[in-house]
Length: 126
Image 1 (cartoon, one colour):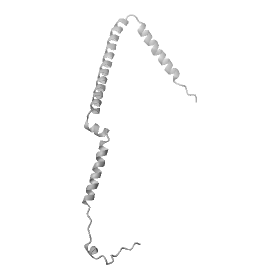
Image 2: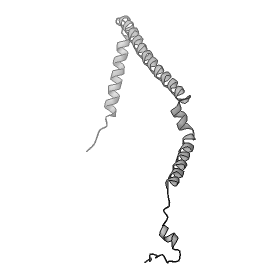
Image 3: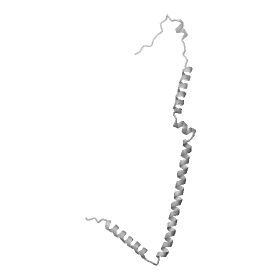
């Protein structure tokens, strides 16, 4: 079965649309009315683009100002950006370790100390 491509249909459609547009723009009577409404359309499009651009620039400037404020003397940013928190964490860990050693206590078996001549039983390893 032979499959025809749609390229010829697309080409004919585009050429017909182009001819219709050219015929419509070449007519002399409605061209004056068309140019007045065309000017208003252009002004409307430019106004919309301007409003969108104003909104976009406003968002960009707000974001830039917020980032500048964030990079200044913000304590959270300073805390994360430096290695001070690692040093403080290490110091805290060492202090906790020393504190735990101080809490440790050794119990002394007075009976074993008073009778050194007696043999203390040892556990047999298997």
